[in-house]
Length: 292
Length: 247
Image 1 (cartoon, one colour):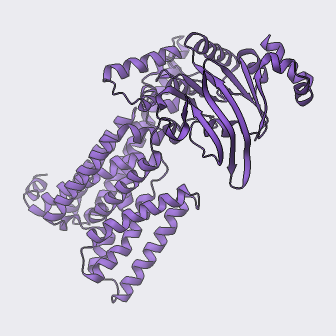
Image 2 (cartoon, rainbow over the protein chains, first blue to last red; image 1 turned 60 degrees about the vertical axis):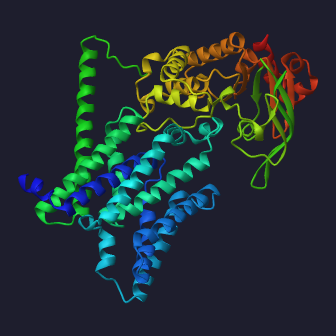
Image 3 (cartoon, each protein chain N blue to C red; image 1 turned 90 degrees about the vertical axis):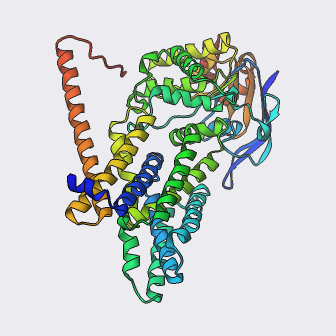
């Protein structure tokens, strides 16, 4: 542990923890909405699309992140359009654009003379190489994402729970869905630096499904998901430093560990609670269960 | 005063007509029962009136305003047809779901006012003790009451109910009908109610709308019960069931 605290004196470690925390927090909060809307694979799809824009950026010698932002946001809107117009199912729309993204990326990489180290770092992420400018961009965009979610919180919850009812309440559901997907696209592009295109969807899915095991309300689900995401970045970076393994992969493994622990814990707690109710029932006491 | 006016309404799904030239009006304070066979356009009619389904031709006015210009969404309550239970993993408490109904209100309510409205709606449906429970962990009947509480939290003038009793046991169903009758009688809430149960419609509704892709009958039960044309259409047994319960 003292080694880890010592490591935080390095500016690259500070940048990694700060940028990673903000990005993971945005991914986790958005993830709760996306997972519940059965759109959790959007992160995977958008990340694969960004693979093409990253390859293009490297070919044109333009910052891949800046180039990816408009393209991936556009792709997210295209996916939504395909689903809204019932041209294809949601998962098929994601799969379709995802495959085109990867194929385009491979072709561009091939035309540019094959895969190189830069492209590899975008595939698996390199949080320890986050630049000061990227830290500011991460903080700014994450703050924007969290700000929009705070402002639209009630609309987002209503649309996530029951889209038809939300429309009858006068909510412009199409606009809310568009904003949700555009925010997802922004966070996915930012998340690529942390864990890479192949693993970025884990930042969206893991904290959300971990939180959903134990949350008793929507707000606590968002809180748990956020805490879980930030803790996974800190633990993942620490693990990477100690074991000298890639930080992105370590963050994903920590996330998986959190999910397994929470899932097992909630199952054990549920079994104990059921056993107590059965015991109370046998003893002739009211089980206190309101279910009909 | 007409609270809903539907004129010559036609709705298509892809190229198939789901409703053709439907015209009727609902007066303030009516309790309108909507019946018809499967695929007759009942749900489509309600969804079109509340703006979920677009229509190809005709006109809809709610509270005197054309649907496309209608803004007073908090005056409407809607209980959608419920084919599935809420996802048990959905992390929303009963209070949160009921409170989500307040989103339609344009006036800014204080936290205390919101909590009071939610509490009143929960009390009305007798589910106050469930406020902190996860909605997905409740039984079908309890979930139905939560969704009705959400529809009532804005104290609406007009309530749309699409087969609301399918998940309910007979006793809860009777209580539910009695509650709707109280809302209609005491709070003067206009109700448009789809049901497959002609007996219940006959017992509780004040007017009847029979659909079969078009309006077959719209009027009072007296007119319906004394119409030889309707006897021919429905058969005397069904007509008798509805008229007997209404009496």
